[in-house]
Length: 113
Image (cartoon, rainbow, N blue to C red; front, side, top):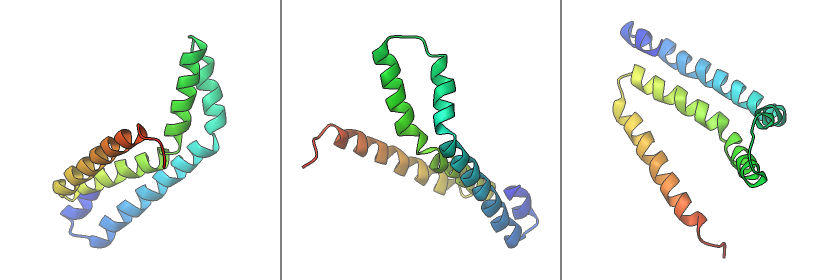
């Protein structure tokens, strides 16, 4: 949709695609957060394994679920930048995301002062 708007040289349509899809992403992300407890219950009903594995899975679920709106917005931005042929921004987003993960994983090993 973004590429089509770029092809017709319609800056308003380009912006509307971003805003519309961004709002959809935020809406779905918010819905995921609201329904996180039922999603957790359904998902972990099917998990068979040791208690430690289930506890680790629950911890991971709780840590990741709060990032759902940001992940969905990231998908929107990446698609929008690709549609505008601004691939350097997609690469920049990927580098910043990866470096942030590396730094936060490294810092996670240190106790808070």
